[in-house]
Amino acid sequence: MADTIFGKIARGEIPTEFLYEDDRAVAFRDVNPQAPVHVLIIPREPITRLSATGDDRAELLGHLLGVARKVAAQEGLEDFRLVVNDGAGAGQTVFHLHLHVLGGRPLGWPPG
Image 1 (tube, rainbow, N blue to C red):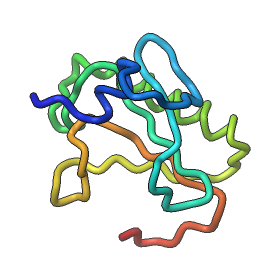
Image 2 (image 1 turned 45 degrees about the vertical axis):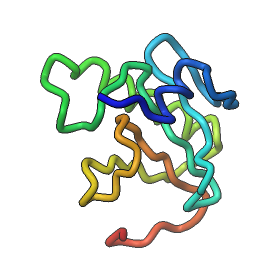
Image 3 (image 1 turned 180 degrees about the vertical axis):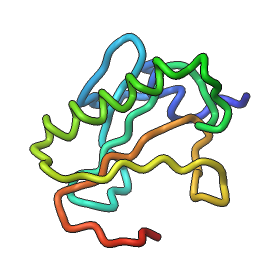
């Protein structure tokens, strides 16, 4: 797997203000926000995409959801959207698994 900007951020090679960090994940603001609050959550482990995981990664995936809940609360969001794009056809542009936490305005449906 080729290294990505998110891998460099997770390793601290690109200075980024983390809103949350632990030994398994980090969270930071998206540089191209699509809502007043737009935070990215990434695992420190270089996983390309959700569909590249198996049942053995369930604990990590659950942890990422817990981080999303914590970050949303920290940002004062009562309502928020959580997005995972899986593959280029779904809009994934950086192939390092990441979750988008979006909020701070009404979010229409369907998305996209």
